[in-house]
Length: 183
Image (tube, rainbow, N blue to C red):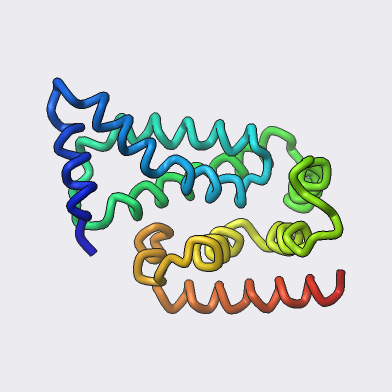
């Protein structure tokens, strides 16, 4: 899938020295909310999601001139955001020198203390179910379920075959259903 006409115009603004900052600002405005929620679903905490998003846009600023336009800008941005989220979670595990289950327990505690979540609501239960998934499976589930990203595009974002992504999503759905049934 090629870059949309609107994105081509934004990229053209970015590539001109006089309008570079304006082009970048418009790209950030267009995509920041979707990227924030993608990061938030993976790292859970609002402040952590903001930190990840800041790192995403720093990388975008540094690398946007090299964007080849052979994929959609949206796909390229999601790839950077997903990788930043996974890197953040890896660093969290390393910093704390604790097991993955302890990190996930910590994320679950953050979720429970978040004033935006109501324990009685299905959304909270769904978030806990998603949190119980392994990191990469959580990313696949999030991209497919929330962002309705086609497998072809997801394949570019996660550098994984479409078949593997379909299997991963299928397993994630089964795990989420099982979690919701039992909790």
